[in-house]
Image (cartoon, rainbow, N blue to C red):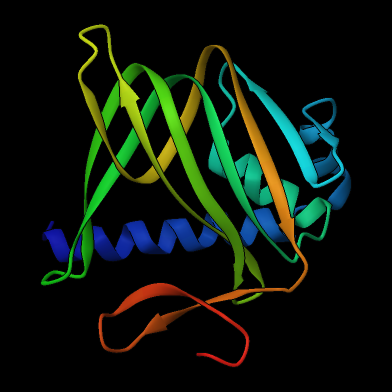
Length: 177
């Protein structure tokens, strides 16, 4: 199968997964989040455990708590961390997965795109050799131990849109898109 066909299939599967997440009953999403976060004066503190997918849980939190937009930071031990470097010529990410690593830092934003939460995250991981790797986070699964994520709310709903000049998602500020 051609690489372009595989890319289209992958995009379709991601869209289906996001649609299923958005369409899932609120009770099921709440149950999955039960005991994994608390409200703080500025937003939320989320603690994820072995096997939890960080990106999916941030999406679920955004839906369950109707978060207009937010910034987040996090740390923790990861079973797998997949980073992507965006190739503007091909308009796709070149992924690389690291296993059993410490997430030394993760930072990102929660916004909305086409009615669904849109997570944009970057981070840096280190392995046993203490060599660091990082970049745009595509996927992140917690390993033994936990991941601690602090979510700071913003008052306005923010949306992502595809910038036609670069064919990539960007965060739009109200009145400046």
